[in-house]
Amino acid sequence: MTEFFGKRWHDMGGDPAGKISYDQHDFALWEKRVDALMVLASTAGLMNTDSLRRVLEDMGEEAYEAMSYYERWIASVGQNMIEVGAFSTAELARKMAQVKARGSTYGDAT
Amino acid sequence: MPHDHQNDEPLSSSGHPFRADDDTKLSYWQVMEIAVRELLIEKGHISASQVHEQINRMDARSPANGATIVARAWTDPQFKAALLTNAGQTSRDMGFDIGPMQLIVVENTNSVHNVVVCTLCSCYPRNLLGLPPDWYKSRAYRSRTVVEPRKVLSEFGVEIAPDVQVRVHDSTADMRYLVLPAKPAEANGVSETLLANWVTRDSMIGVGLPRAPV
Amino acid sequence: MKVRVHSHWPPGHIRTPAYLRGKQGEIEREIGLFNNPEQNAYRLASEQRALVRVRFTMAEVWGDGAETPDDVIEAEIYTHWLEPV
Image (cartoon, rainbow over all chains, first blue to last red; front, side, top):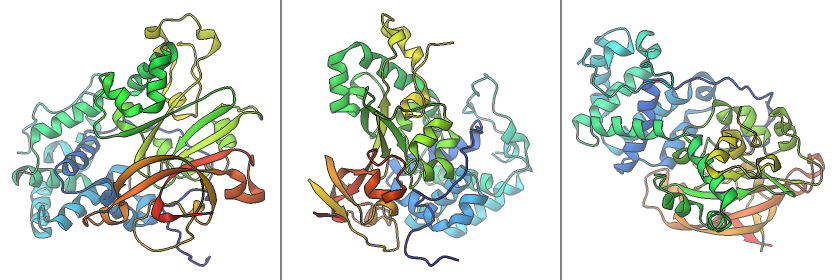
């Protein structure tokens, strides 16, 4: 393990890396909604681009490797909303349990 | 409202409703998206129609917007000068809704080739070109473009002559970048409207060159 | 104007990339005042800070390992990260 000197994982310029993959996926409706929520919550003054990024960075490299782009984004938006007091952790917990109970697919639950 | 499908479901580019995510097993993060959205609506921070409108606005943004701007710059020297001086205002004046985005346009010439990257995250002129391609957000592109841009460009099929300077723009803070590619000689005499078809998304990121429409 | 980027390594949300810290470049243009991201990221009342674009040569950033020494990198850097050379 190399010694940590302050360069954080997301700060990737110059890091060794392999070939660029050109795989492309179409954005699903739920991903577009995540994007819209970030824009609208920012417009409403509840968060900003820097607070979005700050949470993404603090989630760490493992999250970058294991989660998809909009999975990380909704995790950050949710965290930002709790921080700013838009809703409480308990309210989010209750709502997520309700949503989950609606069905087994996104179409059923949304 | 499990089965209350509102009229806010956009169609895919093929014209079909998005279904894949509707039919696969509901994930933790999808549950969170629904919950966050409903809570923000219930508490009056946002409205369902705003979400719908924002998705429509985003779907309407595509590289075609940037291509229109490039084609105008290729045919109107005064417009090009304005674009290089104040790209944001010039784009707004042309009727593009780019929101609060701060834009810089950089010009490719006989002696300079520009390419855009964001090493810290995934900054991209999304309010003009739409959402970035997946490779733009990848570790490989973000890491390598600042250290070996010619090799990266070569992988994209763009060979830069030794006497041309490569300028890498790292989108580190508040500005977003659009490359104004050089107009191909073969495109001389083509009208502004048709010229837009020569301008690819990749040519406006700097990893491609304009080409005759197929 | 020639400037050098601070070689500072604090934790937290920072928009100055690691590979440019300690490197010397030339101010390419001034962009204006923006909310300091280092405060904005934590939803603190943000001071307005001047942002400039700095041009670095590949030779300066990567030394002997530069792909083409005369190619350049341009990046936006907040002036509180810069010192005159």
